[in-house]
Image (cartoon, rainbow, N blue to C red; front, side, top):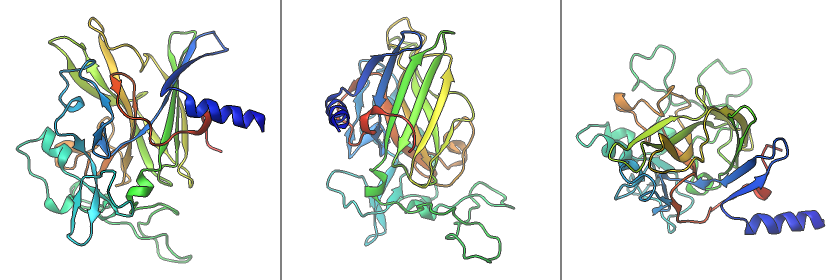
Amino acid sequence: MQFLKKALTLATTAAIAISVTGTANASKTTKIQGYVSHGVNIYNGERIADYSNASPMVPWLNPSPLIDEVRAYDEANNTAAVITGDTNKQSLIATSDTFFNFMNPNGIIDPALVNTPIGNIGSNYFGFQAPEDRIIPEAFPMPGAAPSVYFAKPVNATPTVEQWNKISGLISVREKRNGNFKVKVTIKNGLPNGLYTLWDVGATNPLTENEQGYAVPMGGLPNVMVTDAKGCAYAEIEMPYSIVRECKEGAQSCSSYINAVYHWDQQVYGASPGETFLGLPAGVLAANQLTWPTSGDVLLDPPTRVPFNIHGCY
């Protein structure tokens, strides 16, 4: 009992990112708690981290206004609004075209795909002719039913804001003897049987006139995590570079944040988070639900935490 009390005290008073001494090779392990996200670096209408001193030239890291990728559905008016602290938590999570409009200011997107509950988007199916050809899976079928496209039990296809906001995550980074880095990733209280991908978002040539943003699959392909029925997932990834390397002039690159993208269309798109160039971008097919800032100045406290900084699913 005394151990649990001590662990609880340490967990609630710990910094957002902490370093502890490892035992295998006396290297340091950096642990970072994740942040619930409603898009690119946004939670409840507020900026999660300020990257103006780390990667000032990357447009999507420092946008104004912020880029939301999920919204709260207003059933009475058949539309959706930016999620804030005052949003009705029982509102359904809905799609948004903000990311598409930011990346493609003169682009056109089907209005039926945005400001609608994410459960209305559906998935590609056998015999589809174009990416826009989609079917909405049925509920888990009764025994003896004919084969059909259905959600695995107990997938939550139409989560509320409250359910979206329950997710928490922990990342640990430790250098190995061979010079690579071991990264542990835990997702807790995500959406059950949910399909997630991990992304390293950052900048090349930081703090120079040649600074450019990048987004790559973290740890290479495949970068997929699937939660269990309790919304938990765990992965161990070996990487050739550190995601917590410093953003400084002279560096080839630095990571800004790691994110877990939830794919509500139950599909992944290789080294792209969505079929962006086919008019089906993030915000319509998927969205950042969890982000781990690795540089910049963090502005908010984590709204959720993985208890005791402990990895794994139990």
